[in-house]
Image (tube, rainbow, N blue to C red; front, side):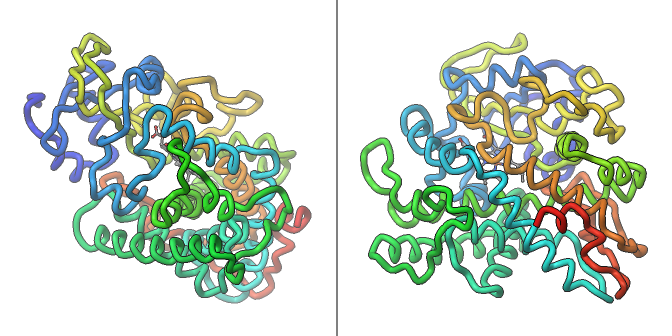
Length: 429
Ligand code: HEM
């Protein structure tokens, strides 16, 4: 395809297959020129590209994300859109909250508790694992964030967060649902921040683990690089940048269930596990299944990469899905095999489902340890469940961004099933 042809329609039609297909048609180079949403773009691929992309002298974020993505997925003024000192100061807020000692364990313990309650409620009926996981995650992260929300509000937060992620990359009804969900949650959380600043504690509870400021307190008191408090709407945006991605771990939980269904022997390894296998399994779920298609920014100045000129302002995309299925990087990439990661953590620039570079200073996801911890917990819990998997549509369509098993992964639970069949959740509760 000529680089002058705009790729927006092919991206919408092909979804996750777009970037690998574009590269293949050009002979799999490290950089391919194209156009997206009417602007010149360069698609980068490979470990050297990860290093190039995460050097902030090369790629900036201000102005890179289209309005429809901000109005659904991330929010206006989000940390994702900041550069330089403004980014460093805002990022420290997230690093201090999400990467401090006890965060992974605290949140995991809450998820375990809510999951055990949820499983107890499935007796004699079916459950859609994706929906159940989203609700459990919303309850846990609301507790952890310091938001005392009633049961039905937690369910609504789960549905809204799912809608925000589900509708960010697509025109039509899913997109409008995502916009409405974001508007509703931003408005509600902005009010909560104002109430907390005004001394109202009705909606606010202490962090259950007792470890430092809650996310709500930290965001409400955070001062940006200019020394000012965040305006309530931006504070709400950043609170949602903790809550929404935690709920999004439901996508990975559904993929974990799918992997266990396809390869039941992996459940034996998880059941016999001391934690190392579950972690390796979590890494493999994040590598194998399609979630983030690519990440993007703008060239900070005139540059070169992979033999291509990159004029200042070019939209630079880093291929994520294709990276994880490149046979040059991953032997037999379409084989789901947690052993790839058993006893070894991924090296820099190899596993990038949540970005690359340094999470403390660059744009890499600060919630990666939390994600791996939660997903490992879900994997162990799912391996311990004694459920039936009825006939259903488990296809994962690649043209849909984001995708998931079509059915959401339905299980049926015989009435005899007790949650003590989920040994890890029970024994550690
Ligand atoms: C569901 C699994 C998750 C995936 C696939 C994921 C993926 C990503 C990706 C691809 C980025 C952007 C990297 C870039 O722009 O270069 C990112 C950034 C971010 N993520 Fe995650 N994430 C996940 C979970 C989480 C969790 C659980 C949290 C918080 C509890 C979180 C909070 C954030 C924040 C605040 C940023 C912005 C970082 C910045 O711009 O400096 N994410 N994530």
